[in-house]
Length: 206
Image (spheres, rainbow, N blue to C red):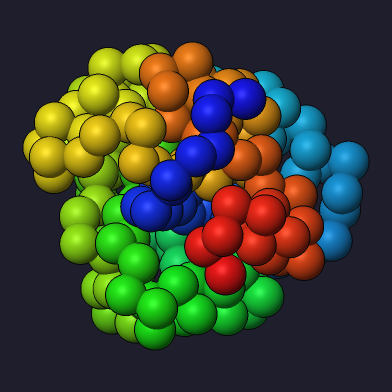
């Protein structure tokens, strides 16, 4: 891990850290609880790779057109990802929001760096008040690059005038935390709110 001396800025990933997102929350309803059929669909049609391309900036109109051409019988299921995106989010991860709240109350500079479509991210801004607490948010879909690409970390640092050695970055994906660490940011692999609290306490941030 990068040196943890004098860390004063905290950068959060969003999905899987502060927000409980999983497409299964929606598709379990659409498949009426048929887990096998749902997993087959998410494994061969609306796959993680397909979604990642929207996180990297591809427009949903193009993404949907590509899949519907291949799977015309699944058009309603394909379009549901965007049209019913809010149902892919169960809610906030309360324990992490409590940590975020404590950091905010301490006056800690807070930022967010998220792999998220630039089309669906804005739809959640009215839903989660804490999304407005950050001094800056970098959304991969708006930038055309995604974590763990070092370029998106550097973009955040440069845009907001941050020094890597001052920053802590929290992500539920170990690869992303490691990518931050390689740049001199203290990467924290998020597992659960209790572990995060311990990690930030060890850094003197809580």
